[in-house]
Length: 483
Image (cartoon, rainbow, N blue to C red; front, side):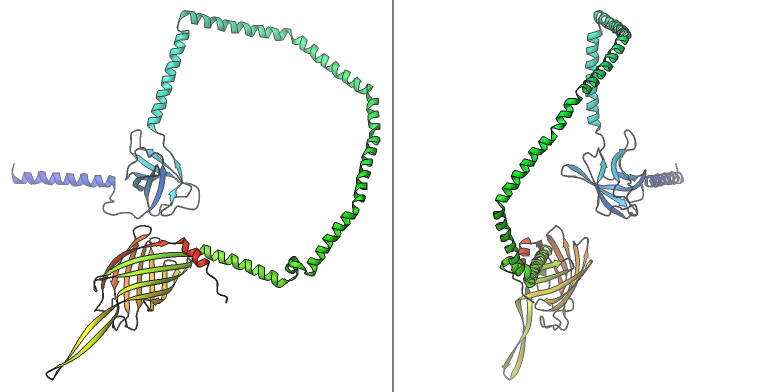
């Protein structure tokens, strides 16, 4: 075979491989080239019945996403679904696990509900239909089969021999004879039933005659009713006499009650002053309202404590922060803090020396570490917050931008506009990012002192932040200054 034939065979093989690859990716999808935008939903099952990662999610047979992750949560399977963006899933939808055939692949099906509100990113599908476990069904079928087998064996033992068959045949014949006898008895006693009904009619007539004959005794009993009424009247008279005998005591009690009522109306005593003195009433009302407002403020008040440490690459030193954030409402907060600054103040010391008539000026830079204070007021507008106030013992401003439900924060701060801190011509500007890797633990990084060529450089660090309920009640019990 010459080289031309080898080239043709190789070219033909390459074309065949390309066609096979195209149809393979055509069937499996081209998600390795581009990835559709999606959002996340969660669903819980007691048994996922061999459902695998990357299994399809379908609505009405149409693929709308995939299973991203399966994990165990509190004894149940927690399935993370990636749903294509633009596919709306009603909140009352039902999720179940199906297969493409008797032995086919598993997929998760969502039956859309009828509500007009739809699930958002991070929501959970509450309604599920658990799939029947094949092993349990087989065990139950096996148990039923054993019971049927025992029943058949028992029946075979009972009716299998000739004696049992003969007894069963005789029982059927006896039942037929009993039915015939019952029919004959009913026919023969038809006339007796008619006779019984006639006797019942005669009994009713006799009762009617008895009532007519005893009409006069009934009238006599009714005639004695006035005597009973007379007894009731005598009892009422006795009660009246008893009230007359105690009238004096009742009168005295009534007069005392009347006097107490008059004193209250005239403003005498504590109750009277409370009823008549409008100022006292208003004072009590205002005090109660003030207590309610104070309690409401305390309940809404939140306190966060932050410990943070950063390593500055340019001065090659650490910088520590301790902040207390007081948040009376979600939109407003106050930051009180202490900062350990390794370059709190930079000054230049000049030394003049004269040797053999030659004057030499030596300048030495002195760096002073300082404890500085922060007191800022912050206002938040959705995911953006503005801050101003005292920053590291000088006036400063800052802006924060929050992402990922406050897990990520980008911040920009500027302070020391006079350049006193490091003898700089420009203010101290710092840009950084803060990310919470856990609920209370975060990492920080950024660039510090951007406009100061002597001290600017990157920094990294981290810290912890937690909410302290005890501080809420501590500040809530402080005495209020009258205004």
